[in-house]
Length: 217
Image (cartoon, rainbow, N blue to C red; front, side):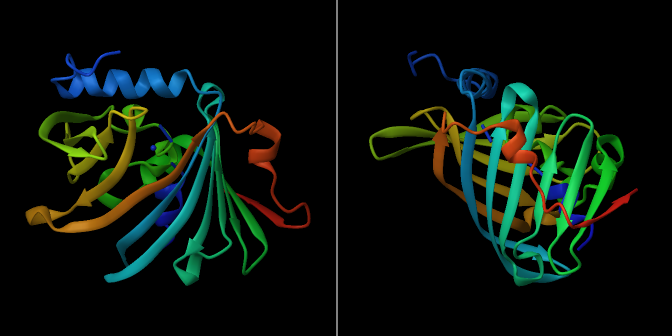
């Protein structure tokens, strides 16, 4: 469970005729996100935590240009009301039940990330999240009149696969899966309430309870 925190501290994320390769699609996603002052969305679904399938419900808010992201958990129950704040230097994890904040250098937090080898502190940026993966386009579908591209990411070194669905409507992710051995689904998460330019501030994203005990790792 402890490795799930740095893992989850966040991917937020013309003509469609030329979008025929995974690289083309990722460039459009990256461009769309860089043009946004801030990004927020909700992730819901299920994930295998401690060998059990559990409900996942969390909100991601980020300011891509500043490299700051905030993740707030609603589920599972063991993580409810916990908060993770990540920037380019460190990950701060607020534990609601103990009223503690653990502070971990970003490199150490990344090394501890566990689910499929993916670093969830980069979850607010899909292109950045997949930097260490070989990505290919495996399918195209239509939803609500817009094309949705299914990408499959295989780690260049070691780890498990990921699948990401990208809609051409705003060039943003709509669904993310993490796969274990034998393509067993470790997590299946849907993206909703996707918003940009909501007036988020770095100070607001980094705000944590002032009376919490701070533990540096």
